[in-house]
Amino acid sequence: MARVILHFMPTTTPVLMSLVWDKDTQRILGAQMMSKHDISETLSLISLCIQNQNTIEFLGMYDTMFQPNFDRPFNYVNLLAQAAVAKEDKKVNK
Image 1 (spheres, one colour):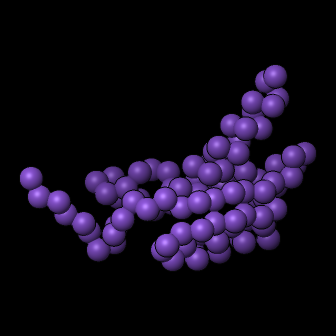
Image 2 (cartoon, one colour; image 1 turned 30 degrees about the vertical axis):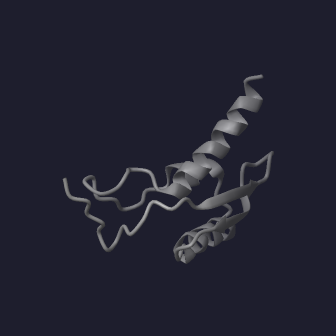
């Protein structure tokens, strides 16, 4: 068995993230992210979402390019927003 590390997927190091949104409108207000790798594109996406007044639901389903053999359909920023939506849904269903 060989271990292959592709140059475009060097590691599975976690990205620490938090997302801030308006509780009433669900609009994205900010985010914090920390990684050993360059995630500036993701922060640019968050910045664009703030400028466009996008919601956590929009970001959760935002379509990103992926390759089925090498990646998952949802990007880590999609998963972050989906967790925010789930948190809000849990509050509503109490």
